[in-house]
Length: 196
Image (tube, rainbow, N blue to C red; front, side, top):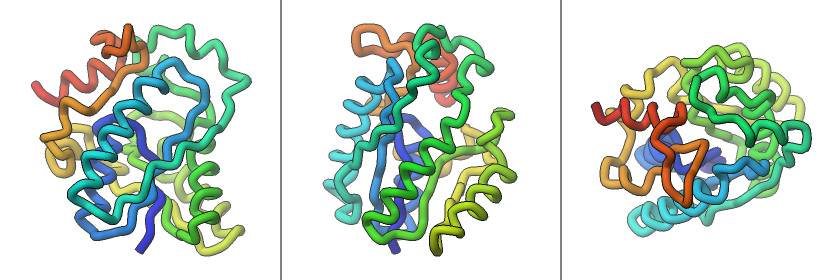
């Protein structure tokens, strides 16, 4: 079975890959670039993670990098992303899923996976959003979006599915400084909370 896995270099994405490795799926990872300030570092770490994982799991395909221009949200790169409410990027998961749907069509896959948990009340981070997307995508064929972690806490996902040997390879920062995590943004604080 093929799955298109929407991934970054964070814990949720590594856990998502591992979830489908454990199900013995043929995994087609996709990273969607939109011009955000963290993408260069995130993509560099993600390539390293996929390279590492593919050495022991041969059903991970090469990383596909897609582009979903973010022309209307240039000001987001000026944010500090310290608070959770600063992190919401309007239509972000919609953009990601549309790119993944196109990739699914190109490689003849029907299943698309995204590692959202629904913990933050964003419009595109809920059961209702996924149901609506599945209804929409079904108009184009037998496509399904799966969210195996929806309703779980980050800690539960980390404890159950994260590959601990990849901890140092994970990159979770929205304000990278000279290629390093800033240590103060919302994502950095989230990372720190997982190891406490």
